[in-house]
Image (cartoon, rainbow, N blue to C red):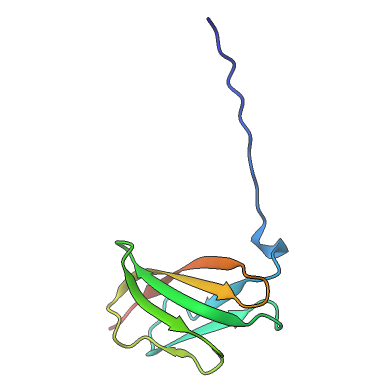
Length: 101
């Protein structure tokens, strides 16, 4: 019996989403994490940071990220930053590297 394999490719362009953010600078070398939103109407409601092992290391409700988020207690390494947009209810995850000298 022969089976035909079918492949389906799903492509999601992040730039088409109404909510997106960047981490600046990345790698982060200072004590503050700066998050910039692509859409000025975006409002971060919640932020989670996970270490490379998937452990939650920071969970914070965020009314405003313009001042930056203190991350001085986090060790050098690779993390995932997950932010929930208040308006769209979309969650985006981005990688972040902390490099302390």
